[in-house]
Image 1 (cartoon, helix red, strand yellow):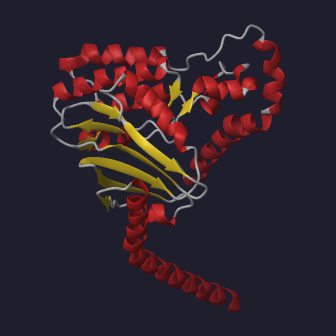
Image 2 (tube, one colour):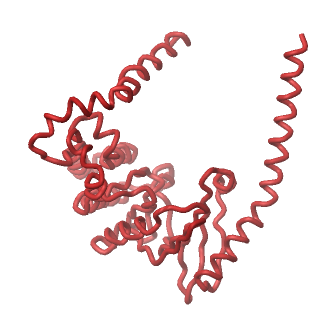
Image 3 (tube, one colour):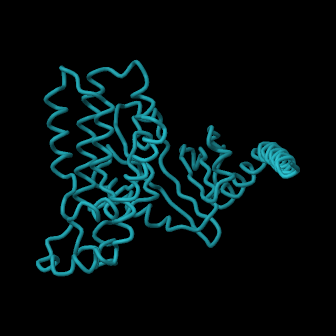
Length: 299
């Protein structure tokens, strides 16, 4: 009889601790942001800097990899700064972003400079005025002409990624930004990789990269994500032809083979055997588990 009572008391104590922790973090959030802002102002010799607070700022502070965003002014120019309190390859993001920007300035954001050390890293971009594609899709003032323009620019972005062998790995509507001039820009290359370099460093993956399982596991095909975004924009009669053209283009490059290695079929079997536990988990155990849950819940 005592065990449930003890458990209830422990639960209450744990809830009180969590509430107190939330209060403390909420109170300390402005000071935390101001501290980072002053450090960035000194590091980059900025004219002024202000934190951009969103609904997820507190969650980012308490996460394993805290990240914050700032609007700043440098020599009279307004810029956007992304700061992370953990070490990462920020130089890779800078190089890949600017490689695409140099060839297609209309659809990519300019990266200005970056700094990194053992404990944190920061990268500065041009400041964009406008709204995300996710917000635009939800709004009621998304006209057919604007939709058609976005669809065509989506195709241009896909072409640029394919030509430069860059895989973004985080393509969703919130990472597309529509400027006041109507330009669609793909932002946030923090997870991006150079696909050629990635597979060059992992040559064994090339041997079986044309199989569906390994394509999904290693290639992070951005075309699939863009098709999902295209579906959210919806097809209208006024731009049906444009919509179909872009959709067929994305589908053509969906699951594109990374290599044409002549003897890869010889090595596919030992590689699949090595990955058998993962294949069983992803392809057999998980679907069966989902079906059993539905049966047990009665739907």
